[in-house]
Image: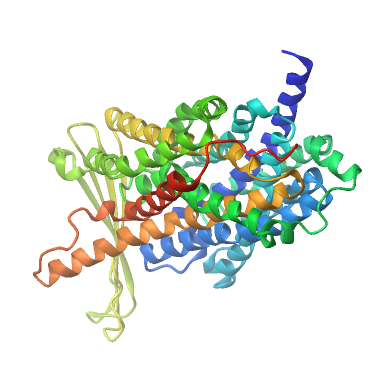
Length: 525
């Protein structure tokens, strides 16, 4: 390998490590959403708590465009290096502090408020990180290999999710299920570990030099004095900002979050697969698919970015419903044969009485364990509160199901996650190079960051919340119809959440097909 390539490889490694850690920090929250819902939000309604957690998770995405504007402007004024050093520090401290917040039971509504504030800081930091890293690498790369070299930055988002799942898995293994889920248990450790990784990355980035293209502009006095005005006040440039958003990043964002994050949420919350097991199988699917980021980045240097990205959107649109229905049927216990003699039921709890009259609210817990002929196992814990005061509103029973898969079903789900990751790599592998080539150097950080973070932060980041809400709404509508003796409105409620990414990706596909060019923009860089 030549000296130039060695230098470029070290630049990519230094940029990627920091970006990977920032993605890890950002996704730890989502990866632990099911547990966070029980720690920082009021008990009593599991679905409401989960939706509140996903809404807080989504809030971090919604503010990413503001981070893109603020840090993008900073990056175009003072440089790439120091801007993404600052975003790294903000992200790391915010993640660490989330792990230090007492539970709702200890401090009440202050807990979700603090989580929200720190989550917003995470979103602002990530809004400035990606554009800086992608721009920095692109400005060090030869123009004819920009897709290949920037695709290494694209890997960091998936690897960040992969590392978060891996850390969660081994932490849970070390603490055990009860120790991991305790109020001050092992689930906090992944947040605390972040501060160590951030410190190491900070030291690495301190030794990086400024982007040569930006340094040259600044030394010649040609850098932008008002990046926001030149990016969004200039009609010609703003047209490309809108095209980048509506024809590329909007569709790319929903495909990315469906294929990775919604897949994990769906497996955990719709299929009820054990937290550790679901994390492991999704991580395996991600690891198998990760090399394709580089492949499609490399391919885009040869045949263009547009065709690959739009093809990824199209196959995702057509395949999502069949894939997710197959995932559902793979774990569907109604189609499996129960071994009834292995079923066990354990009940705990006593009604407190005096003279035959209940004197206090009492909690009954029923744990049912089932085994199926194919090796699948189910654990169902049902908690029923009996109220002493009959005038109070009846507490809805809480039921938690945990499914442990057999080997065949586990590999089926891994395969289905892997297929989705191929769609992700097609839309995401070439997009950094595509965005960089749309905008001139002096306003590149600002111009590319905004459409990227609106597409990913708003359209993509809202996906887990919207999709989960659509599934919950469809299930509720079916239950209401059944009680009323009416025909159920939704044949497959578990697929309703997919309409959001399918519609958004379809709109983006049509706009991209009609208006995006497959030619590289040149700005005399």
